[in-house]
Length: 493
Ligand SMILES: [Fe+2]
View: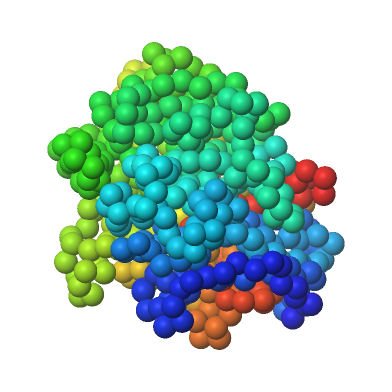
């Protein structure tokens, strides 16, 4: 283990004997921030692996007011950087306004996802639902050389130095940041143009907006998108010329919203709709296409194929899993977290812009989610998607599946029981040109050895297993999204 320094002090008020299923075991939160330079590496660390892997995790510092949900925890970014054969690690909480206020108060002040907004201590707050804390805990990307953390229910975009994780404040976009609604997680960076594409959503009309920030970090496009009512989009997609937004039939019951209640229901009689809009299009330019009813949490990629726009993502065979289960109320609360319960499969939707024709099909029989690609192929024709399999009933990833969209072939790696990985970063090999001439980087939560490691795979031989691993200072909490940023994209590195 390298020399490890501890930075600052984040005081946690959680009880020592906490047994909440998503605040203990593989989800045990951290409250310590470390700096560890030059980690000891086992195996062969490739010399042509150059860049930064960032991972967001949820780490609650205070007990929930009533009922904790794993998406409520305070965002903590883990950074692993690879350069000149050295690996360094750092982790930092995102210094959100909500975290700072709760540290000051010594308790939770806002309502979580599994709580009624009326339990919030504060009357203000963030999120499409309102009275929530923007924990910046969902997603992290690198745009214009800076790391950006975001929240799935819309909020601020928090900027961090991608190497030091120093707080760089919030995105303002020169005063044009849409602060009233905020911005949703799953902003998209187009490596070819340097643009950031984004959306936000709310319970008030217009229920959806779409926007573009240029490579210089200026807001250059922002338009309302007409929807029949409040919706719960979680992700978007893009091609070279279009952005793809969605209107899925799983949304908060409109009648209940007016009573301050937020219950997501699936409507199997309402079609799914994908909206295709030119990347700088006016509101009236969007074209909607109907498909089988489902909900899609994550899209993997989209591209143009002649007159067709092709979108890949994870179709949910069961968007609203049954409430009952062997673990009682916990099953009801966490049923939307397990991809085996939701039956999520890689799927392809096609829309012909000339004829209006549509088609769709499963690309795989395997239940996977949280798919990532070589971002150099984002929005362009591509072959490979690297997704996770889950521990049955849990929001934990126990294996990786590489899917080849050209042949349908799948290559798998299964971690040993009790070892869980994070969403992988796809790190193109320096000088490589083939799509899978790359490395996969992930962080493990190893319950057998009570530790976490950064592990590296060859993207063109996933079944081989890790080729290099380096132990982190402490076992991390499992969490949500991650990204890979090539060294040359990091400002000043
Ligand atoms: Fe997500």
